[in-house]
Image 1 (cartoon, one colour):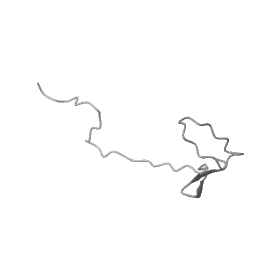
Image 2 (tube, rainbow, N blue to C red):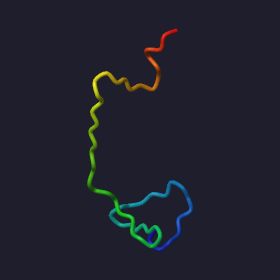
Image 3 (cartoon, helix red, strand yellow):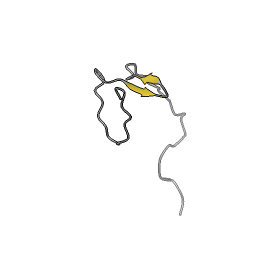
Image 4 (tube, one colour):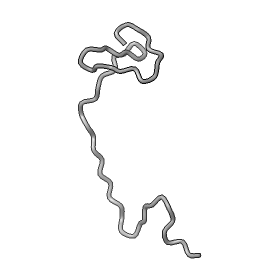
Amino acid sequence: MNGKIVTELGTKVDTDKDVVLFDNKEVKKQEEFVYILLNKPIGYVTTAKEQFRKR
């Protein structure tokens, strides 16, 4: 960052003033967002736990 090698996790960066390089390429803040909308077909269940398992 700004010509110094940073080795400490959690180092704060001011995106307006600081220049951050990785593999000699400038890392920039991404300004554009991409939204992806997925529709689940009827009859499919999406869950982290099995709700309909018979005992």
